[in-house]
Image (cartoon, rainbow, N blue to C red; front, side):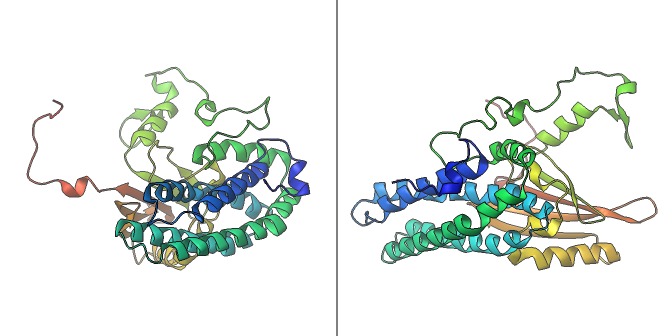
Length: 322
């Protein structure tokens, strides 16, 4: 039976908090089924259910990139730190199960699934008892409307998309931009270091660039990210204006803060990392931005999937489209 506490039953369908409860009920249905299936007896059923459960990442990503930034706006930063760490613990458990499945090491998987179920139910109790009720007290109606638009960009783990919210005002993010006719008039363009581009051309350039870009200003606030269709890491409009230390998992915040300190001090201008993420090799670089007087003006974070690039050998000088 689906569980909706009294305060959530009063919310209209499609409200971001109501959707979180829809997801929690869906997760409980998956957990009930997967706990009754032993992978040794029915691998296919178990694997399908586990893949559905892994979609909880979408719920976590919306909370971290949507709900938490709005709570920070009203001074409540606790969830951005404590609850994000809890998300990461569950992510680690899910990754562990997947690695055991791939290695065909089934002996401990059922125990691990019980542990994930226990931790998810503990998370639901905190959400229901503290996070969601207080969020409803803090946030204004306009906040929820804005949030629903950003939620659409990240997505949900439900079988069907939630109802629009509000039903008569909702606009899909892909339609939430002003249409502009292409113009080659310099009057409608910006004079860049070399050449001219108008706003639409700049947006297209950044959207189709095969890298994730995020611009953080000299005050450590996120000013911009590019809206590519195949981003490596999820982003939504909720991070704009957010303090960058809240945009990273707590376990990596100290590293980010150290990079910012060195960039501001002028002792370093670049930092880079490469990680395995969801079966792909991701190259992450940070570059300090400085004006003509060498004054620090912020940092650009660039992430790129280099999995296929790593496979390149020799030369290819001809067009290979056939």
